[in-house]
Image (tube, rainbow, N blue to C red):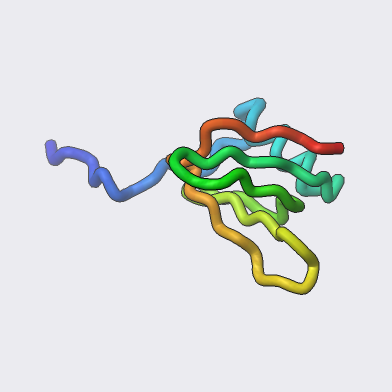
Length: 79
């Protein structure tokens, strides 16, 4: 049996409480703060998530910032 591809990610599991909480924050359009390892804190509105990234809209006039889930240390709701 071959080793699984390390570049493949597991699908987003909606049964996990963290995934459900982030989905509720997306529906509520809640502002969040994300601490990124080795980088700045990113604040904005969470607009979508997938198994690899979170998309945060820092201001309505800009394109979203993609944050790798592997680089996140803390996610906080600001509202």
